[in-house]
Length: 271
Image 1 (cartoon, rainbow, N blue to C red):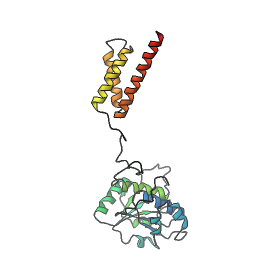
Image 2: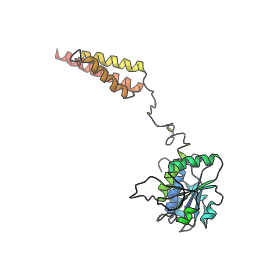
Image 3: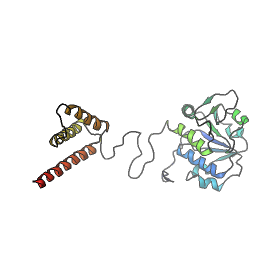
Image 4: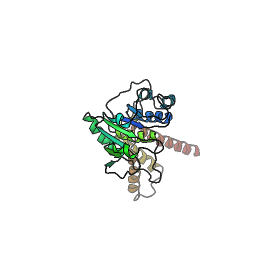
């Protein structure tokens, strides 16, 4: 269970509830719960699970998301499972031939976030492993959520579907990327990461350019004076694109100095 820290308290803020309609296998319920936990969804409702409830395989397959499994509510009908909701999203990959708005998971994530902010109760419907939701069940929802998938292979398993929609819900509030460890904090966002160093200043970068130019001059790298300015521009652009850190600039200068000393020793030995 890499990436799971059971020592941390779960922060169970307002979130959509997840409804699995007539799920067949306990393992699929467990993996769906795990996907829910990944993205801050914590209320699971089951409609007539085929193999009964509670289910030990669901708990085992949840990979530590036991609080979701243990608090799951079982309902005998879908209407009972969603009666307290003000808005319901039905997930499906197939066209239904009914007059109902269709949105993507990304649009659903934004819409759910706005509704939850208004203190609405919203639910997410996921169908059976083999054939999803039937048309009568979809008709109970306010809107359809359909992902842009390969039309020749559009089927997702329950956990994949929950994870996909859960990600779109959670990404809008996520304050960091990944998991905090005892050694390092979670990443505060995408982009260049510079632990234990910082981006190099222009002064440091210009100092490296001057150092490198002097040593290249001494080594006879610039064969003709008229080509030297263009070659220097290319060298500077190369290193400028690299977005060097302070540590990297020091390492590069150390490399140049080491090569220079080695070259001087060889010249001395030749004498």
